[in-house]
Length: 358
Image 1 (tube, rainbow, N blue to C red):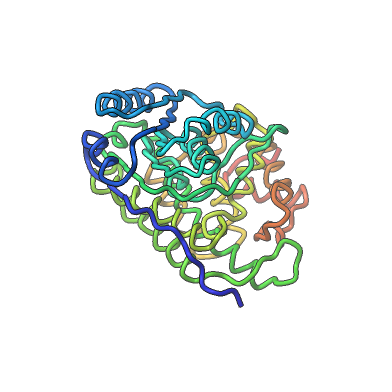
Image 2: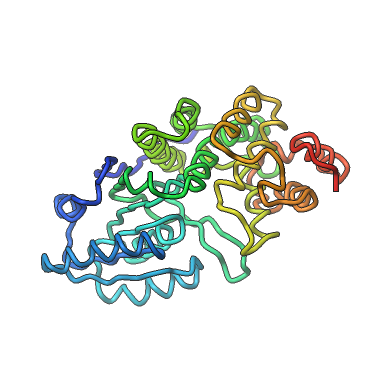
């Protein structure tokens, strides 16, 4: 029986309207700002990162500003090596998944405190110890990094982002339900290839409670709803830290997304959108109550009802479902127990998305 785990809980969590207005003072109260690395994406996150850099420089900090990382492991390692000699005291990541994941890798490689400042709520990675980066083989990898020392979320900024990103975040959040079902399935299949140890019920509870917050929000979301989703996504990250893996928040639905990444490359949709498609598939395969609740939620918040709306064709989704278990053979899920023959998966896709079989 595994013993108790020690996890790092970020000392700073600030979720509020106009939170970025007080960001320099907030960081100064919690971290050493002598030498700060700021990683941003493009457009909106770049502007906010530049504003922070200007404020910190005026206060006497040395600041290195990195824009638009390519999201590859090689690129992140190169940035880490280049910045290590500067002995940074804090790394701040602004934006969506790519800049925050690269910032995590830099913080991990330089043993530096890290603060995540998401400008969209498209996934639960802002407060997890995992970074998703593309390897030299072109395949996305999940890599262990560091928990952030702080998360700052400005709900005014989040509210101005395209609704597509928040929908994706809800898709990623709801996937905790099927991920925990897969975790329990793997525990029951002890000894099977890809099965893991017992379920950490504390981590599973946090993941499930976080996901259920999504079912109570209004759409379009109010500012209070944005805060609920933001805090729930942060708690998902803590569930992963508590489990010591991504198990509470990543099951067969994420494997389907990984397979879509491989098949579609640069044409792949936002991570949370693909995960939402995977949730529709795996909740049906589990034959659980989740299937009865997820589809109405997705319809209410504006997710498509057919594959064309998702930007997918039946043949691609069928291929993704069938190859999904191979994207991570060590992760036992409902896909390992399903009939993944071509005919069976074609019929599954047809029944779920009311579309002719390929």
